[in-house]
Length: 148
Image (cartoon, rainbow, N blue to C red; front, side):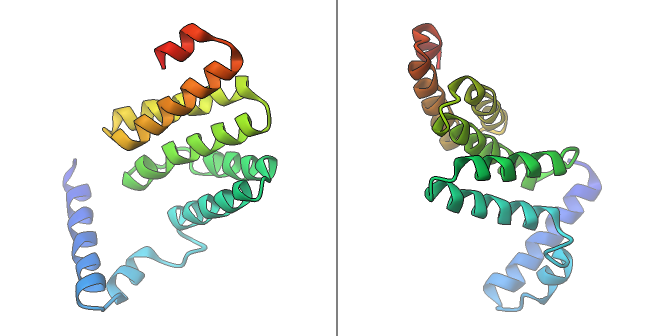
């Protein structure tokens, strides 16, 4: 982590402390900017909308929103991306699978698993590999299911 990243992380930690412990959110609000200008806040909103659509069985609409946000955040880096990208890929894979497109589900779920593994996110890895197992089993690919 570079000096600027450490400084920004420290500043954000102080801002969170003021917001959560002292009930003074002004600093963190000023750092985040307006929600329509903050790509991570937009991403979080799309994830919530996607979950709602999936819960309502609208997998095609959810997958379109999720795919669009992945393209719009391409090139971004940081902890927000590390957190949201595997979740987004996992949701995309689930949408494909629920639409009966098991072959298309393999890529996003594999990407989600790899990102979780890269960042040491054990719960995400478990969920991704479990989903990958189910997808391969559905496809009738026993060796791939066993590998997952």
